[in-house]
Length: 274
Image (cartoon, rainbow, N blue to C red; front, side):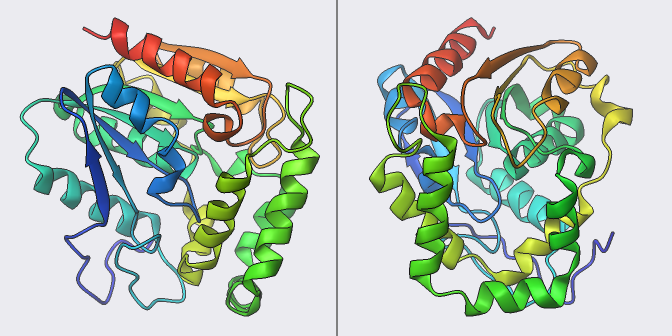
């Protein structure tokens, strides 16, 4: 794994802070943005929490270094520098989706004294969670970058809409994701630096240290997840000594497709933290 880039890792990140109280840091997944949490942050504010949602390196409106292949350690270093710059006065609860779940786990492992709790949403913690076809797709860097750079916005949107219909909704609605979320998802895909799509190749097997993370943890996943194997999440729960698992009838983004259910679970967990 390449950990030293040929440029200086930026110290700044685009982020939004709302509310006051115990800090809750929100970390989105690959090809997403801080808008992943637009349905959650108002609830955090209403219940007396301070939320901090950022765009990761190469995503959203954060810096996008010119590189054909981003490395996960770059994202972690950028995230860690941003966390330090916040100058929080107490440990934070980290909420991470997919790739954001990996970063949250890494931060908890490396900086446990400043991690109060973890909420991991469909967390990406081992490359074998990916279906074989996705693993092969991510490994072909030249073809992958060409496809991403040449794909028009309307096609990104069509892919998002088709995926949303395929997922379905637990209430019987046509789409799993509301219109405004589908629109934002397509925009986020289109503005992600192409080199970011190399990162899934680097997610290591983290089994060796999971048992050492004794921070209270909630793991939430969708039982219809087609991006990461749903069977992988209960295994994570078993290996973390203070974790609990909750399955939702949803796909890879239960925090967006099943907003009320996810918000309720997350707030119940937050309110029980010491």
